[in-house]
Length: 407
Image 1 (cartoon, rainbow, N blue to C red):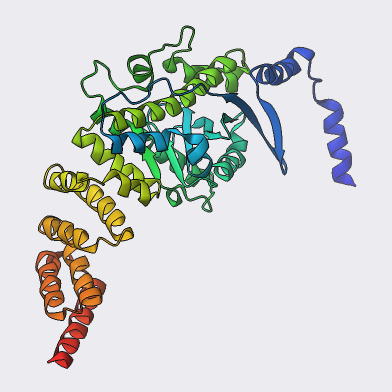
Image 2: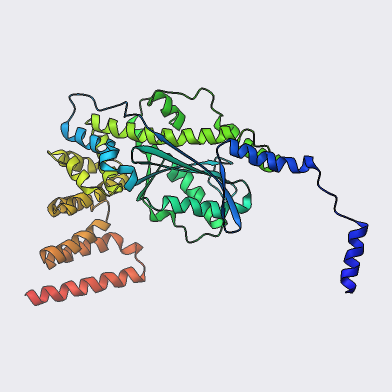
């Protein structure tokens, strides 16, 4: 009772000043301006987040394959482009983009606007999640993941170097370990665009490709360099008058990403350039459609792609080789897989191990399996830990026993 009396006296001496209408106005104006920008408030438990949803019908692809091109590549392009028949985006692809407070994917950078778009039933859908207060970051990330996780592949532009590392950093900061962005395959269009359109006078920003490849520009767009300042003004002063411009800039980025993907696939089907053929083979495996890859490699094109394995960086060779092997094995062409492994094993010792497994399990050729296993050990012995060394010794002992039974 004594404590309650003292608190009452202190409250009487120093009452809380009533908030004036001018102090309350920023919050109300903030919410009204967010609603004018198209955002709607949503609740999840005791937290809230703001969501902007739009749906529109897209025009037909304005860049069909040219006449006189390879019919096999043309049919591949038509199959990818015909979203209504193949239901590409409905079953596979989610296009993502972020707006951030900086240009580095470190923990000090914040993704305050997360976008997910996809094509379904002839219409293009876009969802934009806005971080109106820092405390809502975890619920915003979870809602973003709930939407993305239903798709089989995520498509981005420069997402491998920026968007995904940033999101992983924010997930660690928000303590949301149940969200695993690596669980969904990711297709970054930027490195493919650099190879496809390397002759263009551009820096390969998304808006550069929008102008030079898609053929249109944004007349009244908010420059991307000003977007962080707009968001900081929103957080510090409640100024939300330009949030609509930020949301529209972000919306246009997502739409351009989808249209660029369609144009790139169309260009891939209209040209028989070996680098483009190689990229489309890798794309077919990333979206897990091996029949598409088999169609692409028909009529002798597989030999052209396999001949290209000897050139380029080792990581690029391995990516292409794994894609080819996945397609060949799915179609029962095991000898072509063996040919690829034999070709690249001197550069990629992992393939010696795969050759050893193939000889042991498929051919029952234990002598050849031992030879490939020893080749693997000769290349890797300085890098093996105890577990890998024990695994090698077990396999070799098993192969020697089976070889002795045959003799």
